[in-house]
Image 1 (cartoon, helix red, strand yellow):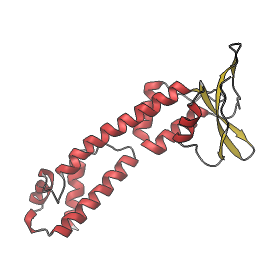
Image 2 (cartoon, rainbow, N blue to C red):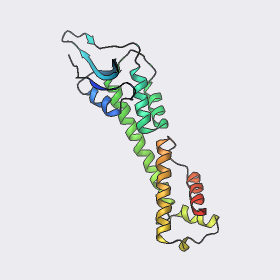
Image 3 (cartoon, one colour):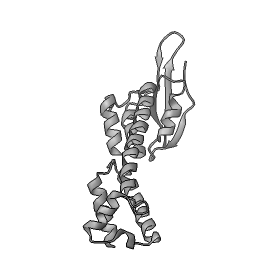
Image 4 (cartoon, rainbow, N blue to C red):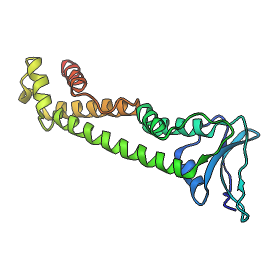
Length: 191
């Protein structure tokens, strides 16, 4: 029988993706169990006779908690896309297959990397330090001479832009549209 030692955490906390991934090692599926004031991510398996074994708590929805952990780590947009693609629907009391957990994690990582690549190009285009085309266009729209900004001001603008890109990604609004990045630049240049 493939079982794992429980990974406990307070019931007011969401399990993180590392706990789900750890529970999939050597197990066919995972589920969340509530024991007193703590939850546990457990593995399920098969007895030598071929019988499936699981500890099921009917009021706990492992799939919902897993998609919430995906959203917390990768943002709402990626979590919704992965859930839709894999058909992750609420299933109280039912385990989530380890294969599905690993597929979802792989899809989320891949999507995040792809979106980061698109944002990287937009960030580079809007870079004040690199005098990207988007930066020059924002300066031109405001009637500013790009060469008139000192290096420290350029670095400050780039840092502020980086923060906005990170916030957008955390909120599931990635990739950032070039028009939105232009608006941010114009706002920062006016300040």
